[in-house]
Image: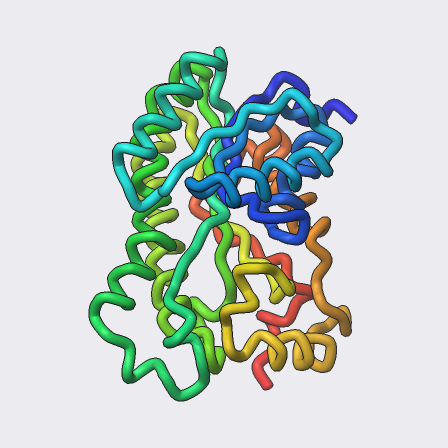
Amino acid sequence: MSLLQGKTGLVFGVANDRSYAWHIAKALTDNGATCAFTSLPGEKNERRTGKAVESLGLSDFWLRPCDAAKDEDLDAVFDAYTKDHKRLDFVIHSIAFADREWLAPGKFTETPRAAYLAAIDISAYTLLAMAQRARGPMADSGGGSILAMTYYGSEKVVPGYNVMGVAKAALECTMRYLAAELGEGNIRVNTISGGPLRTLASSAVGGIGTMLEHTPERAPLRRNIEGSEVGGAAAWLVSDLSSGVTGENIYVDCGVNTIGV
């Protein structure tokens, strides 16, 4: 398929072949896009991400280490990317962090300042930091799409999601303000609110098992989401088919967000 033929961009957050970032990268590459990747620093992390990228069927891929909490790392990644690529059409932000000690039912009130601020920094501020660095190269490419991953726990209380819910709320608000300011340069910014998926990141959330059990009981489609379905939505948001969509939070959760009780 050639929906994304000629489009090139950066994917942050591929940890293994179960992560949302992996499913997004698969959909993008299956539709003709060229993806460059980052991993957390350290030989073990780089090896794990590299193995996941290889499972996409890619062999000669661009991969650089990046701790998104460090401005110097983001500068190095974007500088290296622009030297090695002629275009920047998309950035996929699929990273988040919160200390798992505070991701358990009944623990939110005890969250210390440092854990709260770290969650906001890595899960939300990093979207702004990436947009700052992507703005110029994207404008030079005639525009682009910035996409981040969120979850319904940003809007409603999900036991155990705790400070990550606060961080995702900040992420979604950041997305809207970015969309308002970057639209003049034909840069679109959106989020996908994916349903619960058993990943390395979600395993830190104390209530993930309950989320996965309850969704098939309550969701209109009576099942949990597949990672590939989020990937398909991401491919659409990166493509020109969604050229009029910006500042939006797109739910891909089998409809569970529509159910009140």
